[in-house]
Image 1 (tube, helix red, strand yellow):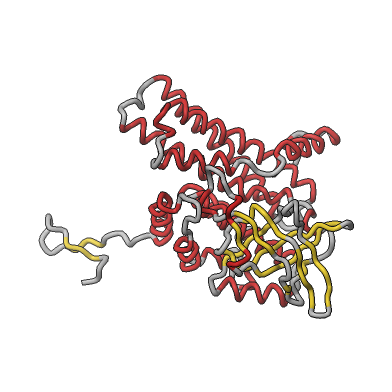
Image 2 (image 1 turned 90 degrees about the vertical axis):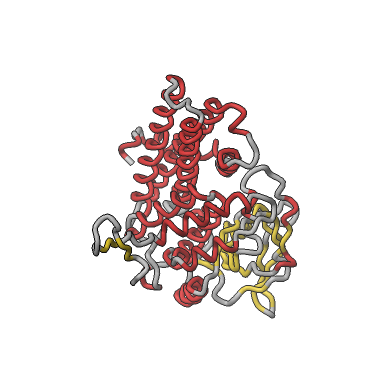
Length: 381
């Protein structure tokens, strides 16, 4: 008898077909089950990356013409990308961070890479390679590019580089006097990895740190686009909806654990806790609606540069509402929210750190200036 068929003992001779397992739910559940063990410096996410490959999620980020689903790089894939990032944010924010970097890298190559570069990358991704985007220079040794007789050679290093030892190729931003140039660089040399500078309480499992590119050679097709393409809108600031979708998923998971904790303690009917539940539910849905609108607008074909303003506003909405959820959980549970080894404490740390994206005040002001200068309302974007 097939495994999915069982006998109903209450009715002689009657066979009942048990529901088939959902591969997506099983994969996400497995990632969630491993999250606590990987919550440490040098934590191993290789099993999770392999699971994403086996499930076809790494390849789903590729354009349709390269065998993907267009997650994050085509209008047809925006819903899939949005839900995947939220799903991963719910089960492990560190995995979600690496997956968002992979999705971003694929998009940048799809936007600005030569056709042979795109084909080479697609082959690597189908084989299971995880990609990343590393933008922050080491202040003491910023990344440089030079043309030498042997070919294109890099110098310098990147810091806050997530996925050391896991990502195989990365899109790097090379800052020059005339602008920023993008290149696809190999990042698979363990001797160049230095995680010692990543001394933070959250997102420990991302294996972030410094990567030294000095002397590294690039392929002939590694340079992506022209100077200034990296900051071209709506794909630069506009693309921040992706990591915000992961933030949203993390806040959803934290809130779900909060409700469960109140239920277990018999406190869920307390009027103050009921007020927190209502406030948290509103916060979650508010950010989800803003992010979904921003994602659809930015990823539509021929999206205008001004659409990035919508993502900037959605980022602010996401941060504000995530911090609302964090405050509700900490106030509602007290010391229990800080108990080490619990899912609530881990997610609280990870989400709090993940929200610390670069220059949040500048992003808020950029959005405000765009609205003020043209007399627009958010609904006009």
